[in-house]
Image (cartoon, rainbow over all chains, first blue to last red):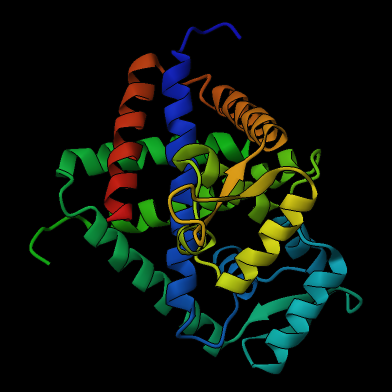
Length: 146
Length: 146
């Protein structure tokens, strides 16, 4: 590697990120425990809410899950009226998953609760620090997506 | 809430953090796929490596798992010579889990690979940005731990 970033700083960032990822997951589970939605179902709702209707294949790729696992997930969510299967108008062989009203309501509510939690966590950050954090996290996220 | 942090900024941070947590988890799984260690086993090794010997009760709390789940996890890891049960010298009724050489080797190797990945991700960050990111993530981590 060309650049000479101090290895200790990288190690510290890796450690903080590893623990933050675990805590984000744990807090997410805690919030979801009040809903009839499992963590993988939440991730599916998140993708459908943010990127619109998707085929099961597209959703499998986003979620790093096997096609059959995603199919089972969607079957259960369809039963619970969170999503429905919709045929493409131009090509009836193509089926996409669409978010239903109840799915949209849950995802909005859960994300609001996550934002509320984060707001509390950031109480002792100055406005400037928050803006910096947002810029840095956004850049980190973009680079990780590759 | 007293402070008037822009809600859009909080929403953006929540979203980036949610996706970063997912990507950290996915990258971790990818690295672990080359080892005979499952993701929860990795988390247990991480705690034992960073905080030293622990009782199953202490480890359950850290991992947000039921006592019985942690016991099963440790049983399997003991069978694979990653950890061993050790009686407390002063109070023989107290049993702690100790990291063995092979467990320590795996955790060190996996964390080095995670650091290497992060190093690549941060290639286009300036040294100043990296230091800022480290400070911000460290503060965020501390606040989340509460």
